[in-house]
Image (cartoon, rainbow, N blue to C red; front, side, top):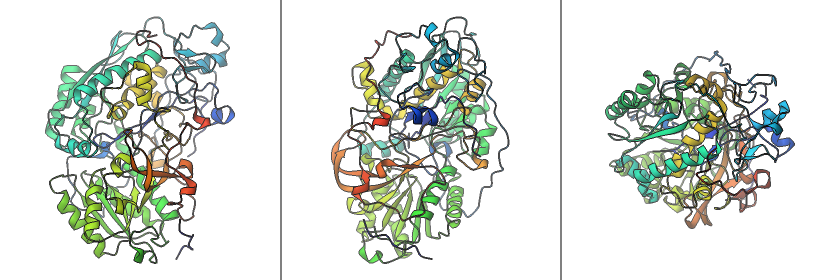
Length: 628
């Protein structure tokens, strides 16, 4: 690490219970992790005590400056200086149901038949209930070998109300999972780079077996998911086929909910929600106010672009700007104060507005941008785009390139930079999957040795200790058919069953949404991110209520010499180092001091074992047939 330089020139009331789900998705562009954590007070008092969490981790998370829910079919060729103003949201959402008490009032009455173990303990009746084999009554949590496991919910008996909403019957809940075509060229551009050869048949098999797992441990109130896997009729960026798929789903299936959708068009989500069908990460475009207007049907499983630009701007303004470019590969830059350029993926109707908002946020810290260049996610033109982009950055004297890119484009940008003899700093600023080892190893390593920035990924734990892959194998005794893709598909059922357990038998989308919006933010750790929905007080007032996912972020740098396993378990050279053991920051928490990257003494690539504060007991799995 270089010597330090002198720099030139509404909090919400804590809820009593905290069932939580954390989700971060990246498909076409998203990897996901789903977490459930105890409330901060509970964990601080006793890490191993019973908690009231509602969700399960799935995989490695990431975020994007303009995530897949914000993408659209309209390409953006250059940035716009226009700004998108959002009126402050003043509406509130009040919980209509209880489960455990979701407010600070312990006397809140739960719906009949809906009771968590912690709530039963508070009522003094936990010992009178038969919680079944899935419950560890020593901790009040389900018998899953993971610290962030959910609380036990009382097994339901009685009338569940039958057809409580569209897609719901006495016995089933109709769900549609949308998946792209196996031969979609945009998807192939992403997956071929990391040799992911999972097919849609593999995905369907794995998803059905994940549902089997969740229905063994989660309370479903007498219903089982009736899953339909739909393969898209067109490409992920085609609005016509996307809208046709949505119409078919609504008219032929009429589900309770849809999971996923074409990532590069808003037409799919727009059509579904106009017909009153809810969806997770199905392609809703727009800003925070749009989500409020679509209540209760539109939900994103990622950090929004609006949220990401605030975090990245704060990081650069407090820890990067005003110092010299000491991490550039060109030593002539080491004595120069940083000059910033931005390269961002512009395939989306709001990408230019987000870029303008990002530059404005940087301006709030006195940071100027010398060059801002958009590109479109088009494999056919990427080489030409890279050539022109690098030439512009070099000509403008940019020492530090802020990347807000898809996970493959940096391969072309870095190769072209080397070809042109240009070796700047590469700052990871909310780039989708760029913060994963598996993709970073595909970039020009001479260039990427100068890469650092931010990631929503938790600090990983050595394979065999944590992860949805391991829990799948623990339960089923075999590897998932879609082993490379399980991190993308698992978050959907993980979130859904977590919320379902707390919603109860009266399953309506309004009740489901009320549960999501009244959850306490997740406990903060280092192996998982923290997320919240609703009114957490973590974001400016105009971004709440929050219908998005992850809230915090960590600082990373690329160690080209480090050896270890990547995100798919492949051993090799090149690993991300997590600064200060993966310490994470919410908006407003970055220290005003020079970044501490490229210091192996204060960084870690992964934990060999799960940190003690996040360790869990081991449990023998229940037979898949032993559903409760």
